[in-house]
Length: 90
Image 1 (tube, rainbow, N blue to C red):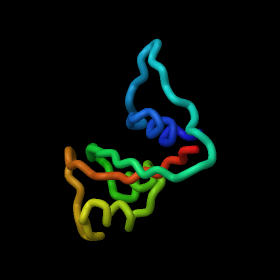
Image 2 (cartoon, helix red, strand yellow):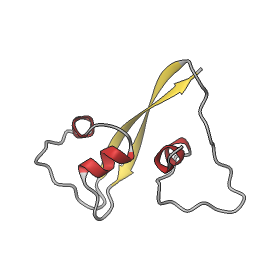
Image 3 (cartoon, rainbow, N blue to C red):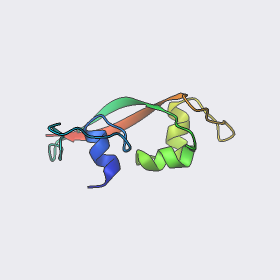
Image 4 (cartoon, helix red, strand yellow):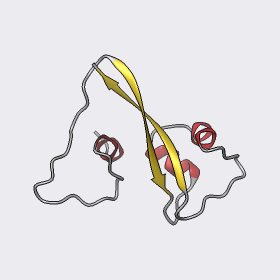
């Protein structure tokens, strides 16, 4: 499992620190229906649309559409982006 998936499963961002004794989810239920979940991502310094799309394993056009952005839009540090995640539930 990659770091991005692990972070997403646990409602974290990949750079977030873990605490001793913290419980984390290591897998999702297999099979079954696809459930869509929305998360909000705060743009960090140095982020780009392709980088964020790769982080959440979506396409650049999807990320732009979810947020009403165009290919000419510029991201600002602190800007909130809506991300649509698909998870499987059995």
